[in-house]
Length: 189
Image (cartoon, rainbow, N blue to C red; front, side):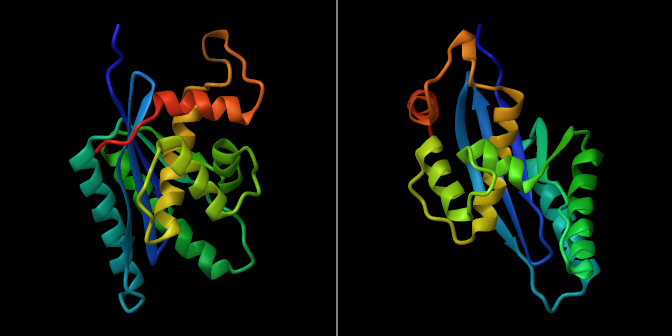
């Protein structure tokens, strides 16, 4: 029996750069639909930027009709003002998904890195290299905010569909795990 396609929208929120990644999962195969950033001018008023973030997420929802929405969870930093701005960006993106009736899941940056690379302390380059391998991607991102968003979407898929014990199959290590995934993961041309 053929499973229907599932579309996942991943968001890496930010008030100047918001990354978004959209994947389609059909019969266990992941296909990259889009990976991009929304660049916002620092000259714009904060409320105007929040409006543009909400507008972009709503537009992506209309265009791709995602079934699930995954976003990076808030993290604690030393700069309270930055945390407040980031929280607002997360909030308007989440509001757009909730308004559209899409289930929302949040993942900590550490959880995303661990899910993609096996190391919760991996840097952005390591995450991108693993995504390239998993999805067989050739393109280079303009900003790592886009790859972070893609990682969030892929992490969500992995969390909802754990592959480590697929049909009772156990892997000896990451190399076997990736080899198995390369067979089932492709990029839409």
